[in-house]
Image 1 (cartoon, rainbow, N blue to C red):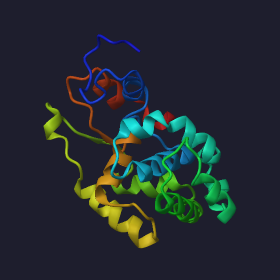
Image 2 (image 1 turned 90 degrees about the vertical axis):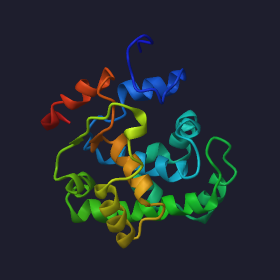
Image 3 (image 1 turned 180 degrees about the vertical axis):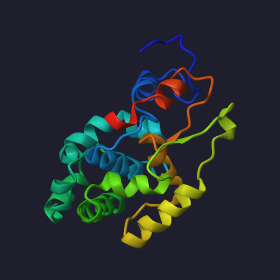
Image 4 (image 1 turned 30 degrees about the horizontal axis):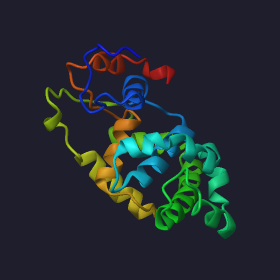
Length: 197
């Protein structure tokens, strides 16, 4: 992690945010469990800052069985009650229940499409959208693609699947490159060898 590189301003001086920005954000991924992790974390981010979620990421991983959708889909009421008293996560009953139901829908779509990644990447025609933002205030909170994704997610039964949350998932999972063009990560993310991801 190099502190003097030119990067997007949103990580500020938070080392955990900087590491996330420098190593993960915007990298195109097709790993289903990683995609579910972002869906789970963005569900809990609703109404909160990303830094709050990132600071509790390890706690979420421990509480939610390393983000394994198969295990989460089988959670019973006893497990849900234990999560409601887990100080390592955001103890919100609606978000916890939604995560369990979202895991079940995720598994259904994973089987239906021979991989959830095949389903979600359809929204960008199978390749990352490469933007060319000069300033942070140009970066949108939603897009036409996230609007379509949100509508499709909701139709399948996903909870916490508004267009803003869907766009956050797209940014995190590299369906869109929203690094500023002046950021050192912009060309690095853009030049990832897609076939190897």
